[in-house]
Length: 79
Image (cartoon, rainbow, N blue to C red; front, top):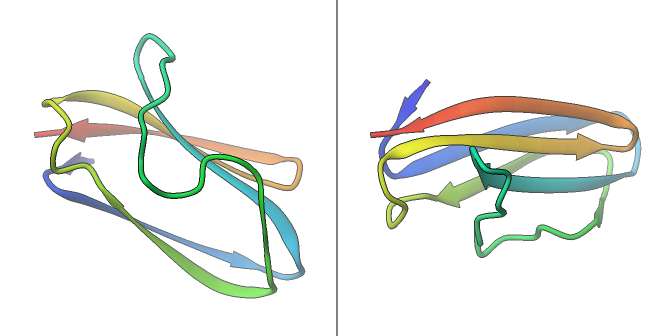
């Protein structure tokens, strides 16, 4: 999914959960997102995270969101 300036992440929690969001390059190095990268507790409901990738070089990145024990990874292509 090509992206140019922003990534919007939507997730829905059926109960209060720990949420971790991390963006890495293909070498596994973390990218500073200016959002939370450490664990945060989020309340039940729908949440949106808007991630500014405007200043990152064009490349492929791995986006990870961990909600409780569930981990989801997606490839992000910055163009």
